[in-house]
Amino acid sequence: MPNIQIKSYQEYEEAYKRSVEDPEGFWSDIASTFTWRKKWNTTLEWNFEEPNVKWFKGGRLNITENCLDRHLKTRGNKLALIWEPNDPKERFVRYTYRELHEKVCQFANVLKKNGAKKGDRICIYMPMIPELAFAVLACARIGAIHSVVFAGFSAVAMADRINDAQCSMVLTSDGLNRGAKQIPVKRVVDEALERCDSVKKVIVVERLGWAVNMVDGRDVWYHDEVQGVSKDCPAEEMDAEDMLFILYTSGSTGKPKGVVHTCGGYMVYAQYSFSNVFQVQENDIYWCTADIGWITGHTYLLYGPLLSGSTSLMFEGVPTFPDMGRFWQVVDKFGVNIFYTAPTAIRSLMGGDIDDVLSYSLDSLKVLGSVGEPINEEAWHWYHTHVGKERCPLVDTWWQTETGGIMISTIASITPMKPSHAALPLPGIQPILVDAEGKEITDNEVEGYLCMKFPWPSIIRTTYGDHERARLSYFSTYKGLYFTGDGAKRDKDGLYRIIGRVDDVINVSGHRFGTAEIEEAINHNSHVVESAVVGYPHDVKGQGIYAFVICKDVPEREDYLRAEIIETVVEKIGKIAKPDKIQIVNGLPKTRSGKIMRRILRKVAEGDTSNLGDTSTLLDPDVVDEIKAGAL
Ligand code: WT7
Image (tube, rainbow, N blue to C red):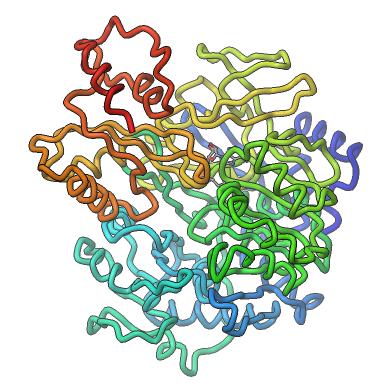
């Protein structure tokens, strides 16, 4: 681990300089610290036109050998995973590297016994239980491509993802715990599979002990299958550019796309970024509160920490159960040293009683992290003061599902830290700001569209089954550049501040939704003729979802209609995409060519209608007055 870790600002500057002047030499040296079955022939091959990016071409490896096997000699008895259940009264569980290795191998053998093989796509729809971690790594062990679907998505959303990737298997559980609630999970899978033909097997892990419907010949219990199965499973040898996983994320148009990451580059960047940003030391207890269903959980709960031989804490519960002090109680209980969470969690806890934080010591904390959305200054200061006691550096990490790992972030105690600023790029990352024409803005104290001009090892390779979509989404807006979809500022010292999405993507509590995707769901409601969705500032969620809806028949009780529309969204996407506000309108502000002027709707949603800008091109300017009058 130490050999890839930057130790001073000077080392950062040197590493950065080399990574730009000699990227191949730079990454080749870092990659050499990993276990490869066969060394690569070419470090990097790339163009952003097709796009085609290949790192460590010809290299052969298995990421789980790097996460597990290579640590057995020196860290076999070290804790790899600590699992804290939802209910503090239930006992936590710990796994050493040796035990985790066995669990993963056994799970891998169960997959094989049920017909899974290299290259198969396997959907994982599971709550935050240890078996979720085993399942993900077991797929990687046998070379199957995991597609984790967050267990809060609906049956329809799961089915879309299963069908897109043509998954042959689903790994799930009977149910899940979420705070005081218990939620059926297998039932959602059953409903999803009514729409899917590709799935031949479902493996069910018992969590709640609920009786569930088991389909003969298709569904099996994990605890039955694992009986007598070997704890040894040789890792499948993979090509550096073989797919490791698919993870679906929302874009500004159409259905969610399957972001593809590959074995070699993802592995190298996951460990490099993890080890550096958090300045992880050998005996640190590290806790990332993200669900493995999102990229943060993939890279910084599972792969990054395990590649580094660190101890990673996995939490089944929520920040507010049984009370608002739950996070801090867990920090004290395990002596957590590094804590990584989302601004939305901080903002929800800020609303509580300050004693819910102050009654815990939090002495063990050394580094704090933030991820997923811009962290406003108020939340930044609350987190830094009350959790970090002004002692811990707070790293604001900017990245995306598509980037695989952290791109712009303070390196704890090494590079500059400034409230609400992600600050400087990591070595190997070459951000630029461009204007609307795609021209690079080289000055400081400017604002522009955030792009990348050079590939890094964990850059998205393609969108599953549709390479053209990847090209159009990320590589066509500005020629020769990867476009992030974000707007950003750069201050006088060159530090970046991410403003947020400039496309039709809304970031709700750190989760992405396309406005088109939510509109499509709303339009499924039989009363609805047309809808337009925009984001608006929300105290806790960062952005809330505001829907303007035209209905053909407005019933007497508008609230029934609203409830029904919400139900439709929950059914098509999931509870996490529920509109916060629904305004029933008679018309939408459209230009003569039929384009909805979202700018106006955004203003109305923000509650700022003083200056709506030029509305002269509207087909029917009167709708604006009506919408303004009915604003929620
Ligand atoms: C979008 C990516 C990758 C982490 C989880 C979210 C926003 C992410 C920050 C940050 C400001 C941020 C961006 C980005 N975002 N981190 N530190 N500061 N904005 O991954 O779902 O792929 O969303 O989240 O808008 O484009 P994601």
